[in-house]
Image 1 (cartoon, rainbow, N blue to C red):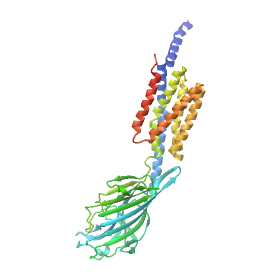
Image 2: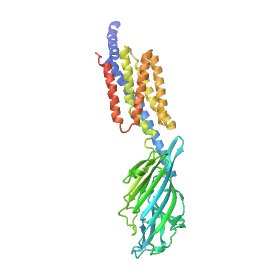
Image 3: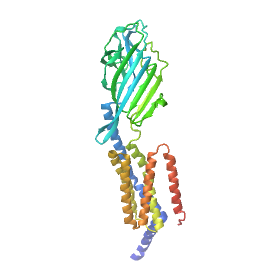
Image 4: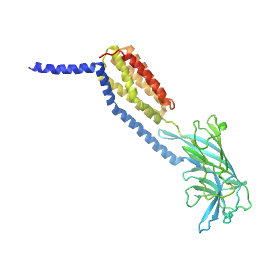
Length: 427
């Protein structure tokens, strides 16, 4: 009786094993193992995000200590004026012409394993004012000349202002107007003759910063000449460098000419935020290794599926069966690639780390393939296929504009090869 009852169970078990060993059963089994690998893959994605957030925290700390974006607002003359009320306002006179030479030296600021580009901007400014002091309430005995700056500006050096060749020290740091938060680094109050029609101002100072330099042309005619050791400039804003001035040699150099037609250099203004001319130069890395790691891990499922496909085709061609545990171990090794890549890229950069991680996983998979398949031909097939896959992945990750079309072409070729191998399959 016992033997008669056990026979159906053994038959059902045999049918189930037979189904799993069939081509379709193996296909479903590989899909199930791929789903299981989503859990450790999600952990890797979280790890990349966590390390990136930590790097952002360190970067923000460095920027708060060294300096943030540098907003250049220029040199102005500030003169008190009675507005008819108990309060006294200020008139701002902007230059007729202003020429600024900016030498930007970029270095890496390190903290632990993290490093970020910061810059020191040395500025030499020459401005010519053509004011017309016609306002009856103007107080020319307490005029000041100084630098407009944002509250976050980190001045590292500020020298004497030469006013018509006469040197004067910067003696005051205050807000430009009582109702505005823009800082004003100004000379001590001095007297200007009402008949004065032209004032020439020369100024030299240095600013620590990181991120961007934003140039604003407050004068009627503005000229900015910039030279830097930075090799990867990125420009934005509504004013771009003159094409003929842009040169790249051990860094870059370029110039801007900004014409502020609405600016009347002879008449003063109660505000200093009316300029529309703006140029922005980015001194941050366009693509860091965390972004490249994120791009790489986005293709992880594709890499796992294509690798499993190689072993699946080997099963079909070699008429052999690979244990599900072997598939799972292969999948874990492919996920380990991303952990190695992340950890090494924080120390040695993305290119070297990608080479180390890919060679390490290739060696591991080749050894494991030989141990499981016991065939030199199939082991070489795995090595060549995975090598091509990692090469294709590297090209795909580093491409920006053509990543989609290159990926589509590559997948088309791979799918054609797979369809060629599987076209004679029968149930």
